[in-house]
Length: 599
Image: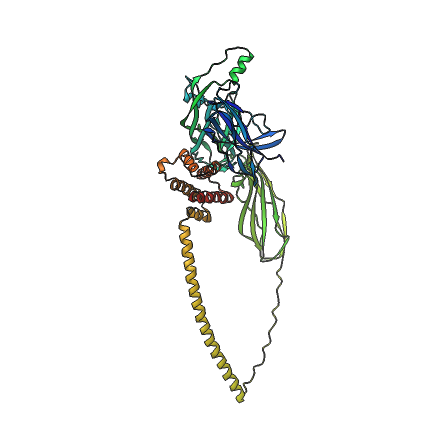
């Protein structure tokens, strides 16, 4: 296993007072990262940041991961300035970076491109072990350049599908990606409806999965916004609606051009590559982008060769049957399990028909799925459990269970079947009833001692009745007092629950209405932010929220966590597939956030 590292890096150790330097704090090969705290940049002005980046690299079959936060800084004074260590909780342990020293002079550093904050790559330096190909960010707006044209060339959203022609029930993969050579703060404002498909997300929508792809000879940072498998539910042309993205894109406007080398030789080339072109003023451009709609041509399944027992299974499958017990008594329940394994539209497969022998009766059926949704096409198993009873003893053989499916690769129908299954049914053993002899009745003795006995018994019975009555009255009083205490306690609990901003969400979680659960959590967090910052709804945007929460002492890691929860809730509102473990995780994060907002 690769060793965990938490390091700080500067784009240059020596800069001019008017230059910029990018500082990156990077955690590598960690499983869990929390509470990343940057130092106080007291000797610098923060021009950009924090900018979060994540990624992975596979070199010689070994995979490594990293997560980083970066800042673009401009020094306030000259001299040797120290950037203090950052801290983070990594895999449960607190780690610190080493301090950095930056030498700041009165002269512009002609050997480094630090006057251009847009020139820094959002990914680690290629010499690092986990590095991906570098992305040359193009954020500097030079004189005569058009901002809209720069955005069109360097920032776009794209919908990709594994195929545009498929059969009814054949899964396809749709991936929505953001390609960027510009820094931005982006938010999904419109999700595609995906009507006409059964939808299964392949990645967690709250994760920011970043990679690098080459487009027209240039490396782009690629963010996977959503990756999902779609199973068409009807034939015909179905359109994947556009995804809409709201973006604040960060630029630097050039103030003045510096002298550039005109030497056509190698020396001049190096000067033009590394010499700072100009200093600039940061500004933000708002733009709304959307992906192009994609049409999927869904072909109906052929009628020729369709088996009579075909129930809609599309893909490649095998089937297996087994009993939970080799023998059973008459009248006792047994379970027949039929497991379908393979790839395709597995979640939509219906239960196979069982040809039950005479004297057998099935009274209940349940199903259980074990599906790996991250694989394409969907793969795994689906087990159908049939409960049945047998009324007469004997050795029974259940005939083979058949299942027909359509194989889109060969474009023909195929049939798979189980082996016959046997079970021994035994006669229930009857237990003979033994007669209970009646004792002869006693003759009442007329002796006076008999009357004395009955009188004493009556007196004892009377005393016992009086005691029981008094004890019952006492118990009733105690129960009444206890009921008052319980009522008061419940009233206190009810009062506490009313102040819980997540009370409604908890109710939806218990009832299993997860769609409403995510909507309720989303509203509760937005309301908590509004109340904490005392901002009207019209002023609730990410810039105001981040600024306000920082002023109240929130760390950048906490702000990122809040943003991720809101993004996941928004994504889940449009996702028909929910997972109970995700619900518990989101509720736990929401509790931490709402408690922090109330603190």
